[in-house]
Image 1 (cartoon, rainbow, N blue to C red):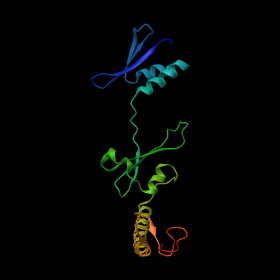
Image 2 (cartoon, rainbow, N blue to C red; image 1 turned 90 degrees about the vertical axis):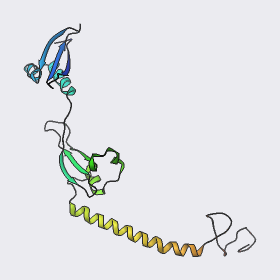
Image 3 (cartoon, rainbow, N blue to C red; image 1 turned 180 degrees about the vertical axis):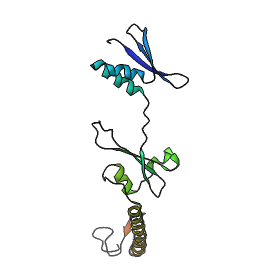
Length: 183
């Protein structure tokens, strides 16, 4: 088995072929479909397991996650459970933006879903929880605008801007040291 190289290829019908070459570049054998795995499973040696892992790494991965939920922006959230005999214990989580548009990955996500994606919470958020937090966020924005309007009006009355742009000047304070207020 030493000195053999396997090359994975596909024919026009989409059937997977493995060509096995020796170190001189001459073909030693061909295996179609998953028969190379069956041929290697008979041997329990180190080389057989290395070749099996090598061939498995050449196969394209077609992992599809389970749809967990959608948010009010239209994003879909997925989860892929780790394999049973894997050293990984945490699932992989990802999302697909609305309409599969790859340019929307920089848009903000709802905080509840982002926490779920980053594995900060075990269970996905419920629609009631997201709606309640969205309503709370909207009311905070409205209150902040009201406070901003209220304080903007009073600040403009207190300040007298003269000379230097955007630098406030007050009548009760000295402009130049020792000259008195307003001087």
